[in-house]
Image 1 (tube, rainbow, N blue to C red):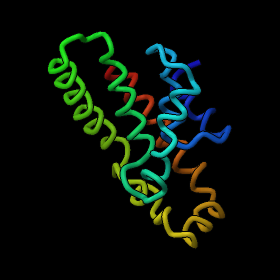
Image 2 (tube, one colour):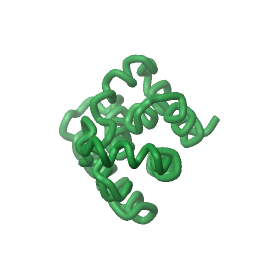
Image 3 (cartoon, rainbow, N blue to C red):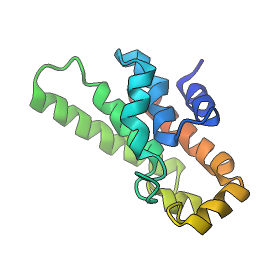
Length: 143
């Protein structure tokens, strides 16, 4: 199964957006799914449901970090990761209008009333699933 399909499936099973992206790639980098899901847990909803950086984007940055696991020189690993993050952001912005959860949803996920509205409008499915798919596809493109 493709990473994007796996990530969307995990999201639909109840993982947050960050967990969905990280767990879709975790096994490729020697990380078990449970550990990956725990590491990514707090990044959903734009980091702790604050509406900040989209969890799928945060998850992608974590995957980029994992992708440098075989580089023994720390500075070289950082430089590679930073370059990949910049490339990820560039390509992701070609597909999505923002890196911010609240901008992507059009509502502040951290506001309890807006959160209810987001759920009622089914935006987690109609917007977030596509954002997760795009994040995974961009990762596949650059890694």
